[in-house]
Length: 284
Image (tube, rainbow, N blue to C red; front, side):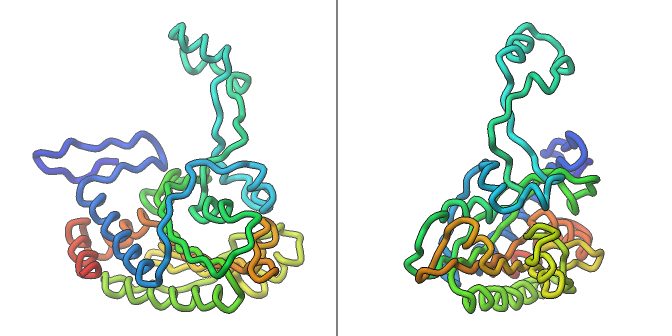
């Protein structure tokens, strides 16, 4: 993939499928969109945090992650001592096999909210928590497509953890904010239920989710999902021991795929430079 360049900007060449590099205009567009969302989050008094770069596999297992998303996980591993010796002898990396990699028990995040929720584990909250964070997320996919589907991408999330009513109000309020923000940026979005499983496929929770969807996606005109609202019920509260007033806490989150917003805005306005003017208007 090559981006449009100026005389002072070198060409950017892709390192492989799903590994996008953004040029100056695209980079500024991404950070501007994130600044718009961050400002909206600040207006709701969301506390800004930076989550951990890796997630423990045993904690993910408590959430049925590997039952539901075994294909997405990107595992963190170390070279074994024999592997280090081979590499130190300037042997070809292709000579390494699975035996030359030692598991660490950690995965790269596939969503930003996991790291925030894990840090609240086994806690009795003094009141509802409203948190926001942006993280680099990673997903193994069957195929990659431009900025629409990437191996590594940025996700801004706004997470609510508290009572049932607050969790629902969080989503209702952000649905309106997403639509208003998109309109200011010149995007018309449609909303559809998604089928990402939070629960084991054979469980009663999964059947309930099919009848009462827990996730809705906001789609750009070409069908790209650029944002979502996610209702967790008290699933994470129960599995991670997060409580409020002695009961398992309810949670919900709002997610923005920042590279996907870049894709949708460029598609709508013809270039990153033109789209940037619309994003700056939304920033004010």
